[in-house]
Length: 242
Image (tube, rainbow, N blue to C red; front, side, top):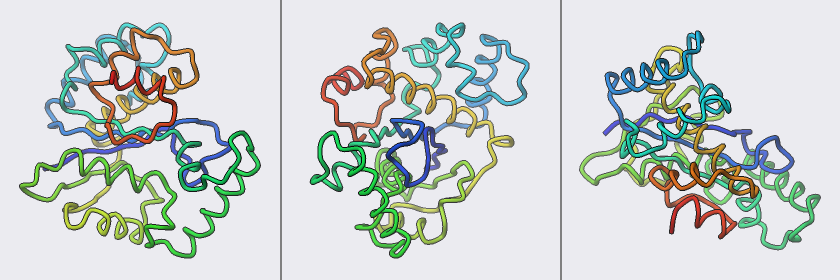
């Protein structure tokens, strides 16, 4: 049971006053051949000369129909991809409910307090703030069929230190077989993971901020991990089609 993982909208454990509202962690279960076929289809449709395709290619307005194809019922990733979303501000508010609803300064201070705690106690679950930790836990739990531990191949990420990997092992209680790293330039499966994660994050972010494209938003339910951390009931109802 091997899954390939990548993140989008990631700024470490700094969650407030950042350039992105939403963090996304994508995981796919796909073979090299399936990934190559999917990438070739993307290349045929987008026709960019870039040597490595990233999510920004498919998110350009002129490629809107390609995005609909990737998220739609004919997508080769249907049933093979899961994206865990975190509404960053809500992630902090859950940890610090005493922060005033609209007090940005209080949220920034809460974020800094938790970051300091995590540096002192890196293997303490109560101190964990980096969204990558619950994201990997959620990915393993999503794909785990109970027969054997899940092997994770992750895009290179320097914040996944041995201490944090050990914390993830503790939280998964034996369900993580191994966590190794791959270079996106060398592993086409990581490139596909980047594309789907970035695409879902952008569509979900637009919906959260009230200017989503309904024709795209309604396609997300096939990909969004139900364990996602999301505050806004209106946008979540659209994203997950509950």
